[in-house]
Image (tube, rainbow, N blue to C red; front, side, top):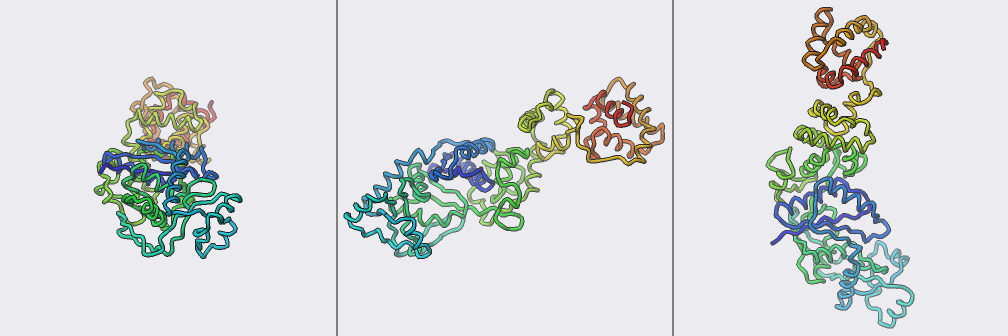
Length: 460
């Protein structure tokens, strides 16, 4: 059997963590089995569906590296749904419903009473002059609807609790359950991998498969993603959309790795490339238990993927990120930026950390999260003039020479080495923690380093 799977988002919002994981599992399965991955935009909810969300979802999928072999949009296929609904109508497997919204509202909680099932043609003709009918599937009330789920085993639902549900609205648009089944049949879907919140939809969908005399595909309902408090993942647990994490500067490889680990195992390995994930992915390794969203794990994975990234490639990503943040002035000198990225690469967890940890490399308006006390300032002001003279005479401005000169300077004056070097660090960077002070001074350059020391000491 040639595997054909689909990811079918509704463009009513941005791509969220759980939905992105569903897309990824489908994509990994298709690529592992050398099958077909279909992207299907389910936009039949005309009021809530927005083109901007469709474009946003597509953009985020591309960022994640999830490509597709076939693309469909449900709004382009409305005639197909209408034709199938009409066919079921003619076969006596569906019927027209003329009930108004008010009439249906009065039946809420009781279930639909089939009041339109046995209308005569004369009655139907009279009602058609007043309003267009919806079409309802005639559901068998006897017995039960069963299906085997790959993860959950056999699931059973009593048919007497399933109403004759609408498959085509009076405005000619299909309902979710109907359009999904029609598309899955037409697109020859073999496996449906989706969230377990769709289990409740499945009995109705199987009723449609039965009416159309088509064998349902294999269902794989994956558990939900929960927050650390075991509640359903929501905004209160932090950002939920892929775009938000992208804006924070997480690498796409890290996000893919993170999503893939939530609800699946890969030979007990954690840090994995996309190629490794494809190779190790298996439906058998999917978990039956809910996945827990752990931002610390995402940070860890992001840091690991950043460390593995070739410097030139990482620098290109940083350039793109800084441009998006409106910091084009920071990327005037590619060679300089590459050196900055290189010295920070082992420390950062996200691209945004370049801004948070390395602003002093690019601007004189850098943040100062560390201060020097008045007593220390007084002491430093007696020392810095001599240091400035020493640094000014240094011809070969590199980390090795800087370390040699400054340590000699400290020894000659019997200074506390740790205190003095930390003070210089704070003066030139505004931070208590930076990469090697001497490497930092080398990258900043002689002119900028000396200028900052002079300005701080009031000698400029």
